[in-house]
Image (cartoon, rainbow, N blue to C red; front, top):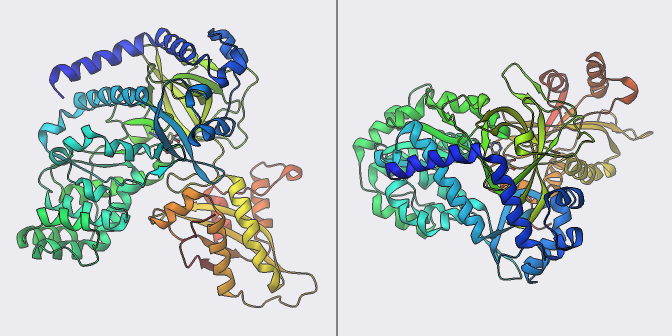
Length: 592
Ligand code: AMP
């Protein structure tokens, strides 16, 4: 980016954040007047485009409400009659799930244009703080493309990141600015891809000025992968031969172009990796790195301690907040600690509204916002971007040129300040998520369903599941789901005291995994989540859990075992009473 380009980006940022209200109103006006004749808006506005009428008549919806309209477009009906006038270029596959499948969000030429503007603004902020790293060297970004899905309409659906990797402008800059070549990013086997991306990063270690991935969990997983495979990687570098198990032809071809016998480099890496502690390993292996660029907020905060250990003081930069529904916010202070990150929402991306959360969020000792379990909306209607209140938590609604109107993204955020007239938000969490060890989101209903299916396997053994709860364990990488089960024999059955059949218990673990949603199963297959574990606790454990919660102020008459455990003390109560542990022995089936 030329200097004047970056300066114009910063100037644009100032203008946008100063004129936020006007830009938002103008954007809403454009969206409504363009799409007033669509079936969806006609039904509420009868061709009118007035903002107040829009707020009065158009309902606040979740994906489920829009799904029938989006499905019709995906099945081949003309989108211009249904949700939006602009022709679709495809769909984004969101990592959220609907009925067990990723959500489809329409994409258009206009949305691509907005993404380009967002990227320009983001780059300008980064250049302001780190200089133009494109001039300094290469980025070792771990990137994994996901396969595209063709909808019956012929339009392709793909993850936003995959679409970005496929873009011609990205392809053009890739060899010069990134260590990973195209073929490796698109290798369908994530293990081979990960191995090769690390190999390429090591070979080009002296050129690497930035390390990252979209989410922090991937960076941590890569370092763990390196920890387990550095000897083999060094041997490849020493001999100039890639391991036999790398069978993907794209990976092998790409490797053949860069891999030459280099015993000196191999010895050096071996030296670094064989040291006792891996503290600061990133800095030692890639000495010119200026920062780690990866989202560390929200569900990713749980990975920051580990990442900090590995990166030896390098800044962890959570640069932006974005979703399939739109690129939304930029962190204007990229050097601040992950726990202090706030995103400034860009008024020219989508039209925002904010539903306030009645039960306010609390802040814990590490300045992290904790969403209260009982949060719900106030009776008052949603407010505009410039009218949010400092310190208040809100649920985000977007109206966009992609056919989303007053659409709940599902994220809860807290207002932490303002840049000019535009609010800045801390990411608090997802609405309606009980478990999440990576970017997947599992609701209470998902857990309930999975447990219901698995517990049926206990029946022939004369056992019943009396109580259960769950926990997202990220103490090792990848994280995994732990389900605590209290089991007792059926009345009159003399099975009491008999050992639990490990085969059946393992099958219960697998059954739960098979019953969980698409994203969970996909993440499991790609080893982004480890095997689900059932920890059987001794009888009376859930009584003790109840006593604990009552001692903390819960009402006994209204007490309900939490479906997911968040508190350390509660976890300790459960863990200290575990009598057996079982793990799912296989990856879940993909076909439900
Ligand atoms: P997707 O649905 O796959 O597009 O994922 C978008 C979701 O990822 C958002 O709705 C957030 O829940 C989460 N997300 C994206 N960016 C951030 C961020 N900077 N911090 C925390 N969570 C994020």
